[in-house]
Length: 113
Length: 491
Image (cartoon, one colour):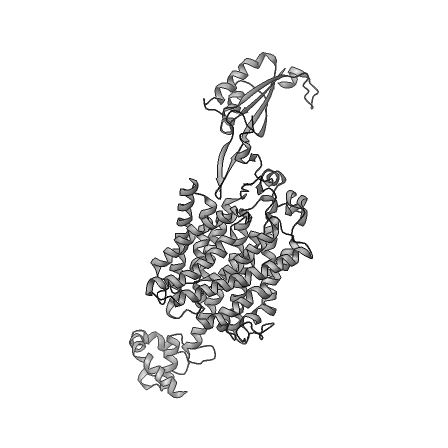
């Protein structure tokens, strides 16, 4: 099993969600996050004094999927989240050792469906 | 008495007679006195004719006296009360502006300060302040009319009108001392300004409106609705409070100014609109009479100055900082309103526009300068009320249609205005500085650092104004940002 953490722009969330649902992904977790990468922050001015906003709000989508779905899901996310501008976000993939559905105690791949 | 009524009848009878001939049939059928039925107009006694005319022109009061003066007095009383209710509503405006321009973790505390300064002020002004301001005076403070007991309804109208003015002066300070003052310290300050600072200065300028009389009005000082009496007095007390308290934690770090943006700009905007509406009671209402309709002209000069103030502040902040800053545009409206308050009755419409425009520019410059002097005034109260109050008072000496330097070349009025401005500064700033210092060394003025970081809402009042996540998100000084100086050190 793999976990995909995709940190993306807010306005791409709805598109990514519907794309993933179309290709059969059954669930996801979404978190509001803040951070910075190459986009860095930007400077603003309030009552005559400049300040910089370093941590930019983004949204993090987490999905856990069977190994076989990895390429498909990654491609779907990348194509949907892409704008070509700095700040499109990043995707991290990691291994998951166990998954359990609480209600039925199903484990691993069957817990994901 | 009879002669008076007859002569009054004569002046009324011609115009009214023409009207009556047209509506005569219906009037005769509902004849007011009840004993005119069947009589022709020509057969009536002079008394009967008078009653009829009085009824037709609403110039008769409940006791049956023919008196347009009685009606006029009632209408004036109504106007004073309506204006007082509008000025009262400015408390809501101040609360919104101050809450919007500060952080979410202190919103309930600021609301409490606005609520309590009006409540305390209402009681104390009735008990003591009114007497000091309007009682019989030798020129420096009144010594009668304590625990005010009005003889007429007009007196009660005057009391409520003056009470809401006093509360306006008191509430100005809460913005400048926001986010770091102890609640009990604020209550003490609030009591003293309503009890002493505002009423005594007020007696110098406005005492003559009732039983009193003061040295400034004796000189010919003109402050129609209180640029100095209300706004500068509040503004200079606010300056003393901000200096005595010191800046909010994190405001000035490593020699740099760190902005702490307000958490709700739309709320501040709503507050400014409420204040703008309230000012239509504040200035036009200060005619305290409807006679001649002079309040309409004042409504126009007031509105012109407010609009020009917004444009002035917008233009200068846009040119200076490359962005049209909403917080300054909102301050600009208030700056224009404060400035025109002294001369709204004597400054022509084009010059009222200029008064507001200059105030709008001045408020931005003053706010930036005050900030660079390391005096932390979160909402700009000192620049809006202190500086623009002084400017507006001076504008009377420059722009007044009668006696202004630029309109008539006469410097006399300007000199008197400057004396008034200076005496307000010395009186209010001096006394407030003493007061805040005395509070600091006795019962304590400023909250502990932990209290300030956690926010005054949860630590002083045990409640949060908003859901927790929202307060924490916006509660820290500019969460997620550092000063520009920090940039180069970062990888």
